[in-house]
Amino acid sequence: MTLIFGRYSMENMENMENMEKVEIAVIGAGLGGAAAAALLRKKGFSVHSFEQAPTFDRLGAGIHIGPNVMKVFRYLGIEETLSSIASHPAYWFSRDGRTGDYLSRIELGNFALKEYGAPYITIHRGDMHAVQMQMLPESTVHFGHKLTNLEEREDGVLLSFENGQNVFADLVVGADGINSAIREKLLGVEKPNYSGWIGHRALVNVKTLRESGLEFEACVKWWWEKSRHIMAYDTKGDGSEYYYVTGVPDQEWNHGTSFVDSSREEMEAVFGDNAHPIVKALIGATTSVTKWPFYNRDPLGLWSRGRLCLLGDACHPMRPHMAQGACMAIEDATVLSRCLEETGLDGYETAFRLYERTRRERATKVQTISNANTWLKQPEDPAWVYSYDPLTTPLRESLPA
Ligand SMILES: Cc1cc2nc3c(=O)[nH]c(=O)nc-3n(C[C@H](O)[C@H](O)[C@H](O)COP(=O)(O)OP(=O)(O)OC[C@H]3O[C@@H](n4cnc5c(N)ncnc54)[C@H](O)[C@@H]3O)c2cc1C
Image (tube, helix red, strand yellow):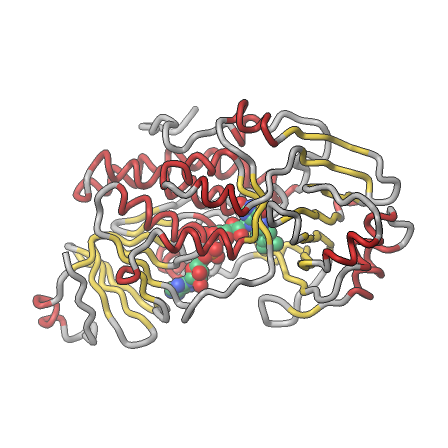
């Protein structure tokens, strides 16, 4: 099925007869949207991705990907590539930010491979996203396409983009992040909640770190009172890149942008007082650091309506403290693709119902724990998160009692 773009106005509907359809339009080609497009293609659907950004850059940030999602990357044929460029931490350590005492040691590495069925990696998110995007034929990814309007019709959905293009699709997957236009269409305009927390993000100067002679663990979360923290980890397997992201209460965010510059001095003011020498060295190796507001939403009662459905942050955004937001988006994409494979395109109503019933309980649980920021602070068994396999989990006909 070929895609024909047109400059059709909503009023001028007779032109629609000459317009061929996209089977599935995925709005947003972020971590969840890219996975959804690849998975749906693998199930045999014709899929096109529409992304507002003109291109993707390698922005300075890392990400954890658990075994629950590495299984999906194995299925998509990119596990080895990602494994070869990522770090494989042997543990997730939690430590007191002042004394350095160990609060928990969660075993990963070979243990994760054996117990949970796939590796646990930390990686630069730009590197991971680039590998994901390589799975999609260029002709199916449409950059510079910001969705501005959509109209549901009996036989499909007419999508309108800011650049004046229109596309007609059988089904639409909203993978367009926390400020989702699809969510807005389904549920009306509602700004996400500012959580009262921000995060500083930095790739630090590894040479300066090494010169300190201290040991920088491959994956460690430093904790202070009221769950203030710095999560630090390798983003490359060879140890040449080290990254941190913080969580700090901050009553207001009035900058009007998604991030602003911060500074080493600000990091020292927030964490430096009596900090453990490793934390001090980490802050000392900071050359450039930005800070980001964390937004979230309450769990959604509606995941789909008609020919539209949501996944990832469009559906259940969360504070990032469980390192599972993108993993949930990719799990969603996996289950959604299985449901549509089961029912075929025409059975989309059943597929969307199965999808929500299979996903809602788990995504909401992760969203709740992530927002509470308690994950792995104390010794606990993470198997329920990491052992999960979205490729084989039973598709649920009904919601659990
Ligand atoms: C500091 C921080 C650390 C994190 N660490 C982790 C981690 O370690 N592990 C983990 O699993 N998760 C982590 N997360 C969460 C993770 O980043 C998100 O949950 C994930 O990116 C959600 O993916 P998504 O595809 O749903 O949305 P996004 O990644 O936000 O992608 C949405 C895409 O849609 C596009 N878009 C938006 N509106 C439109 C429109 N109208 N038209 C067309 N395109 C549009 C956007 O440009 C974007 O490309 C972290 C988040 C933060 C903030």
